[in-house]
Amino acid sequence: MNFNRESRQNHRKRTFVFLLQLFNNQNSRLKGIAIHFSFWFFYLLFISFLFSLTGRFVFTAYLINSMLHLPVYLLFTYASLYLIKTKTEKRTGLFSKVVATFLFSFLCSFLIILVNHFLFYNFYLPRAIEPTPWFVWERLFQNLIFLWIPFMLFAVFYYFNNWQQEVIDKKELEKKQLETELQLLKTQLNPHFLLNTLNNLYALAILKSDKIADSILHLADLFRIVLYECRKEKYELTKEIGLIKSYIELMQLRYNRDFQCSFNTTGCIDGWEISPMLLFNFVENCFKHGDRAESGNMVIDIHIACIKDELSFIARNTIPPEYSKKEKGKGIGIENNLKRLEILYKGKYTLEGNPVGDFYVVDLKIRR
Image 1 (spheres, rainbow, N blue to C red):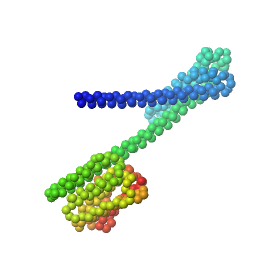
Image 2: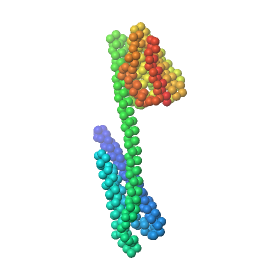
Image 3: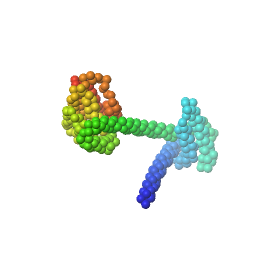
Image 4: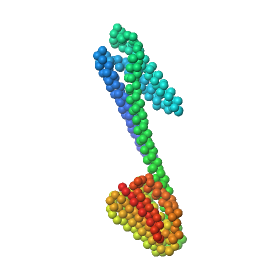
């Protein structure tokens, strides 16, 4: 019964979505028809007004004359627009289109002269007042002007609208590409963090430490943030700080030997947002490389400061004496951080990382 009820509900939802899309499409088509109808209505009024300025006939006569020409205007405009919209191969195709459009315009101009001769001066006005001769080249070229005006207006509108849509599509594509790249970076980052943490738990398990239960608890807290918050492009800086604190507590459970780790924040933290696990990854890297110190004493100092519109993150960790600058930037985590900084904060951040004595210091500054 529940299955049938859910099936009916899903069917109603799909029906509603289909009807909504149909209504939107129908509404869009009606708007397009209204725009085209309005254009041609005012264009006929414009032509009739221009011809009425000659004073030969009244405005009504020229309006009737323009209405008789309307099918020819429509034929030339929309047929030519369809021709230029079709895809062409190389320049020869474009040249053929231009030639065909010009020839077609001359044909339509001649059709207008025929409409005047056989319809306008035959059914509406007496044949006796028709100018003689009824065909002159001047009228042919005059008709070309009024044929090409609506065609050029529609062509400009079409190309402008098409260009605008291409810009929107390009921006949307770039946005999707950035979102896809960020998601790929995050999917690389989270397993990287998991691998390091599992190695930590494995080390505790070998030692049969009583700290395993607490480690698993802290790990669960960490992954709660990872699962529910890291899908966002940005989240509150306070959550990132909580993530760092949980990780530090997890690391304190791992190490039996003494190590010094200080973590402090200054300034107004509230109101700041940051890309998930961006700072955390630098902290994780401190533990990864700080553990290589041959002295056996690992020292890590982390400081976050928010002053006005700038976030400052400084982290330093002990390094072995033989540390080489060639190691700088190695590892999936740091590489991902650099990419994410360039995507999200391009032109708004500075990042420096250099060995200073027995320490490696990372200095990151992000502007709003």
